[in-house]
Picture (spheres, rainbow, N blue to C red):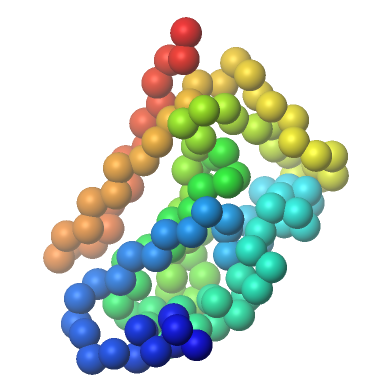
Length: 126
């Protein structure tokens, strides 16, 4: 209800949404889509659709991978962890499998009148 009220306000500014867990299935692995998501993410997405024209992106962590997808005109983007990465494969059904040699990373998000730009970075953890 709180989110629905905020999105209904007469405010022309662009909207950026940040969450820890992904709201929607990432379709990257069975395990992620069953155990790593927000429980009511589909409901939140339905609320976000009411302001899709103003939403510049929904950004989340928790997946420990760079991933971007669009649904109903809304861009969803996840990023690498600044600590450790996970192995991930489509039919994965096991719990967390750390990818210890993988470098950590982060993303720089820039929002301008021309659009939303995401730069992904990694760095050495030696």
